[in-house]
Image (tube, rainbow, N blue to C red):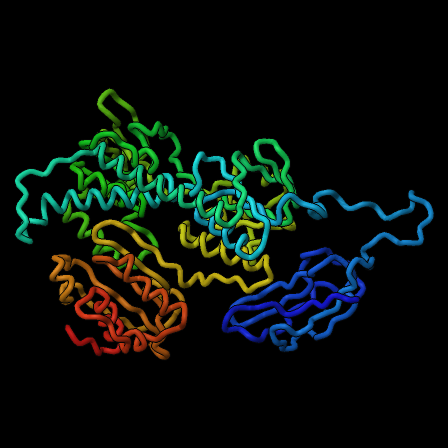
Length: 570
């Protein structure tokens, strides 16, 4: 009896789709899970796979037809030979059709349905979601613990130190204004580092628990891709219907500057310093450098930031970046913007850096006890067999994928930092969930216009959507609403009045296009703005929602009202 190929579930609110393109024609042979037809909705394109191997009998609908979820798209004669199969009437083996190459399709029987290489936020989340959807899943990880860079030497430990250093600084500088008098504040850095290690340990053990809970196999070792359906872990062969590359990223280096993770460090070494450096030079004025620079500055280091461009945090809204630089300078950061480091010489006392203007000019020197190299990150795509397997990489070493995260090699996919896009843990997580759902025939989707970014300094900086500069470049007419925390009652009560909220909305439709926040709890407040952009809300929609009083969130409401010159408290 023929097997029906039906329109899959496309999401909770999606009930219809349009037939975009037939990928297989009647009479053609198809493999199990091989895409047969593309469906399009207003949010995403979905490839519908064959539920079994066989021959396509017919098309029940035409390209351009609108179809309901559950409708029959085509009939498949399971197990039957199609046009691509070898002719059955051949009598001599020598005249049989040539066998396909081993790498053209995964083995009929595989060890796993899905194998994910890398157990960072993208990888482990993808593995969990795939397991929830009924796949037999394994995850390859060479570290001794799960969680990748983020949980082990990135997001989590840095936020632990940021919070501890903020508490230390507040005890020595801010509590007196609240009537809390502390005669002497002492730093126990070893205890602070131990607390950070405990937090990291709890998080990585939590991921290990989730693997066990969801029946995910942890393949410990170095993963290497061999081809469609095939990989190895420390040389041991493993097979899978779907292979997902989620190897993340590594700290970028500067030519001629040798990192030893002691006096010339990356973010990894900067998280493990056993004493506070007297002089810390941060090369790079981006997120990582400023966050870790903030940690050590609060604990007593003199921090100098050397940035090639003439501004901090490239890509953020210009007005926010200018205010951010002003506030960091007020805190005591020294800035050498528009400069580059040309040489780093280690001495008995530390490091001597040679720097000069980015456009060329006189060379000067900077002495430091510790130098933090924070010039960005690069895709971790080396030594994984990707190029040998024929997987296409771009000029920056990132894996090239299509809109469904598929590489040019069938059955192999990639997500997270190893592909194009912002190198953010939550972006990787969303891609991991989307890909798992796509493999299950669902409508996995990521809205890249609604990916928030946060800098966890003081004040925090958070943004989502477009900046003013991007809207101007696109020729989009927009309006602006802005509200300062100085006019917010809760911010005054907290003694945290620096910064503002800025809402950008379409001039004609009032749809929210971007929100930018610098100030207290910006990383939490941005969630409301992200929700607004995801669901196409207007600035008026935000302004008409009741916000509790007194809260910092009222600043978002007031900024939204301000886009129509309706702010109440300013």
